[in-house]
Length: 386
Image (cartoon, rainbow, N blue to C red):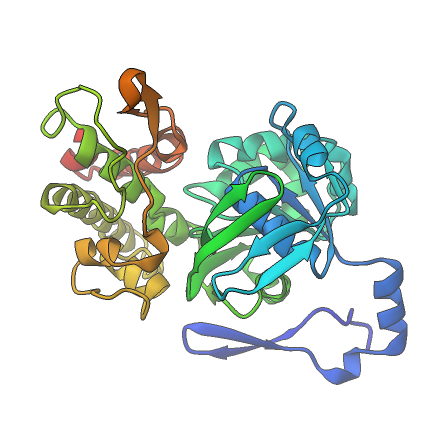
């Protein structure tokens, strides 16, 4: 066969996509090529998700961590030293591994078969621009998450090269995770059962899914979504993060004075915050309905409500999934997670209004929804309020 051995043949089975690689394509010569030219993945970023992904992928593949933020790469490299990174999974198992390199040099993109961006979406454009001179054709570029309009941003930054790469927009991160010792240890608090992903161009879906499922393992299950517009509208961060922040710190609920302890974020959602979230998600549904009315055949079925998103991603993990609020309150992966706050005098706390829940999810989420609403003439009073 003239086909490369790593290109799978797709079998469509309802909403899920299953891939199989015929054994006839796996030959000793091809295995030798893999040894000489190992599959290489770049992980972009230096935060929680980037460190978890780096540790997970390094256990099996040639992995390079890339951070373009200040001197973060040098600090991480120095902190890790000659030691292995220690990743504790939500199963209790511990993975010890180390990346091939930790660098701020964008030219390493020339080595990459896959590039995984695990940085806030406001930084995606910086990485796309830096990689553009070096990126090779057929590279899988996955944004975890893509947030809203990720495919449009890639096309704008890569220019003609965008036609030669494979863009994958994930709806969200695969895990809830935290580093416990920055640069050295991290913990996965919970793994989603499934996450939606859309591929541009769609014809490259089989290759992209085989690569990314291989990186992630059995869970979460990468589930096919027909287009990146659906992923953009489904973006949970655009609604959850600004909505919960507004629900706790708006003038109706907060007197502007420091609080004695950091409030719980997801577990602290009460009736008022839930009403804000329901308002935001209903407005997105109005946008979806208007688009499907204007464009016959456009499939935005994945742009569901926030409640449905929790059922899809965390089904079976929550003690009570009857309402949006109960899903957030009883999700074990959210246990103990607090509002982003800054400590002030007297050991008290004020909300960190520059945290990524606002600095990322408003411009690359809430504003995307509002812009579509304006174009389509859809009223969005809750979005305006938040």
